[in-house]
Length: 379
Image (cartoon, rainbow, N blue to C red; front, side):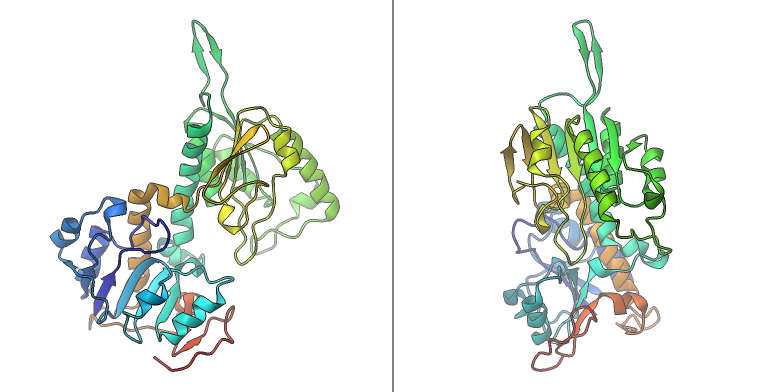
C-alpha cells in the first residue's frame, strides 16, 4: 500500500495532511509513504523530518493507492492519480457539483472528511472540531491584534485600564474556544447560542449567557440535540436583545455556519453603527457569505466605527498546530481501512464512517446528498 502526501496548491493553504508522527503510524500499519518536496514547509515541517521517520521525498503520485490532502484536488492534480486511488481531504462538496463530477470522472474514491459523523468512535477523526477549535483561538488573537486597547483590566498608579468586553455569537467548538481564550486574556466575556444546552457550557467557562430565556427557548432543542426553528416573535425579541448588547461591546466574534447553506446574517450594519469607535468584529463565517454585514473575504475593512476582520482559512493561520491535529484525523480514519493482519487496504463500504464520507466511487457521485451526477467510465 502506497500513500502520497502532496504539497497543497489551492490558494494560500499552509497546512499539510501528514506529520512525522502520523507517517510513523502509517509505516507501522504496513504502508509506504511518499511526501512531495516542500509539502510541510508552511507548517514548519521540513522534508528532512519526514525522511527521518522513514518517508521518501517524491513528487510522483501515479502509483499511490491513497492520497492524503487538506483541500479537494484540482483537475491538474487528479490527472496524476491512478484510477481507483483513495483521496481523503476536506472536499467542500456543497455547491461544487462540477468538482464532484470531475472527481467521479477521474475514477477516484473521494472521501469528505468534514462529513464525518459526530459519534464517539469518530471523535479522533473529526476535522471540523479539530480545526474549528484552533480557529476560535486564532480569532481572539486576530481581534486582539486589531483592537487598539488592552484586553485585561490593568490597575496602575496612573489609573485603571478597563477590561475589554468580548461577545461571542455561537457556542459550538470554535465559539467555546474563543470564549476560553478571551477569558484567559482577561476580557469580560458574554456569549449567545440558539441551543439551550449551550448555556451551561458557556457559563462553565466563566462567561455570561445572553438570550431571551422564555418557554420557547427552553424547549428549542430536539431529542437529538439540534436546535429547533424559532418563531418570528422569538427571533424579533432575541434580535432586539442582541442589538442592544452589541452596542456595549468592544469585540464581537461570530462563528455561525450551517453546512450546505449560506451563513446566517447575525450582525447588521445598523448594529455596527451603534458600536463604539475602535470596536472590532471577527467573522469566522466569511467564506460562506459572512455573519457580519460588510465583511469581505480575506480583508480587514472599516465599517462605520468598527473594523471587520474577514481572514480566510483561519485555522491555517496557525498551521503548525492545525496540521498536527488534521494529520491525526486523517491517519485515524485511514487506519480503519487497513487490515491489521494482511496490512492491505480493505474498505468496508457498509461501515457508517465510510457511508457518511464517501463522495465518489466507480465513476459516479454516490453520496446520497449529492448523487445523481453519473460520470463516464469506471474505476
